[in-house]
Amino acid sequence: MRRKLLLGNWKMNKTPSEAKAFASEIKPLAKEAKSHKIDIGVCVPAVDLEGVKKILKKSMIVGAENVHYLPSGAYTGEVSIPMLKDLGINVSLVGHSERREYDNETSEKCNLKILALLENDMIPVYCCGESLETYEAGKTKAFVKEQIVTGLKDVKKEDASKIVIAYEPIWSIGTGKNASKEIAEDVCKYIRKIIRELYDTKTANRVRILYGGSVKPNNIKDYLSEKDVDGALVGGASLKADSFQELLRNIE
Ligand code: PEP
Image 1 (cartoon, helix red, strand yellow):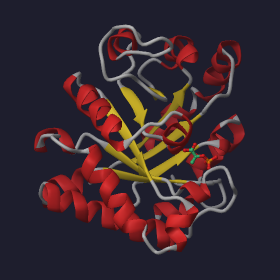
Image 2 (cartoon, rainbow, N blue to C red; image 1 turned 180 degrees about the horizontal axis):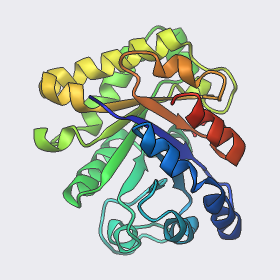
Image 3 (tube, rainbow, N blue to C red; image 1 turned 90 degrees about the horizontal axis):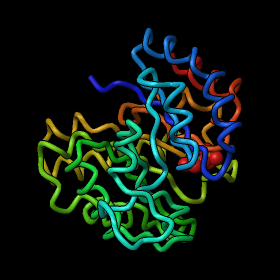
Image 4 (cartoon, helix red, strand yellow; image 1 turned 90 degrees about the vertical axis):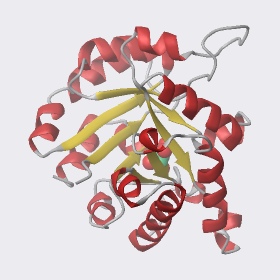
């Protein structure tokens, strides 16, 4: 049985002071989530990680939004896995579409990050999803397949089920134009099929696949009612404590 997962993505929002105040506000939700067997967490900017982790400790997932695949070196502005581990962080987003678009993050680069995270007992949340142009051309599945196959290259079977995959059609992120629950289920089911083909049924049945893209308190339940959608990666609606709480309550 896959546990549901509600994961916020703050993007480039909240100063360290704002982040700490927000973490204190949402901390009580951890107990509520646990009692409903739901995993809950937030992926936050690098400068917010230490403060947020100190407040939330192990009660909630505190994840990074990005990480470098090398342990150290001349990579100005980057954050390494040992830096995250030193703060007790063991989750990171990989390949969010905004990073793919603005920071030239390719699936090959994502693959290096995924392998490095797994090697260090960390959990990658691997984001994939197509542009509007690709969607309208009816090429979503071929596009997503390429992202998954490339991103998971050389990932061992025993590690594959630790990866969380987030299907986020780019045309639905931050636009208010959320994909229908049928589209979300169709693509998430297809992603599970790819995992089955790459590994086996047991692995495919274990991997958690999230939907992301304009998920709001009023539509989250629809997605979570679908068989292959195990949770949501939420940007905008995770930034306010009351709506983050509503997202959780609506899937409990
Ligand atoms: C995201 O940041 O991954 C996201 C899905 O954003 P939003 O919920 O705002 O569309």
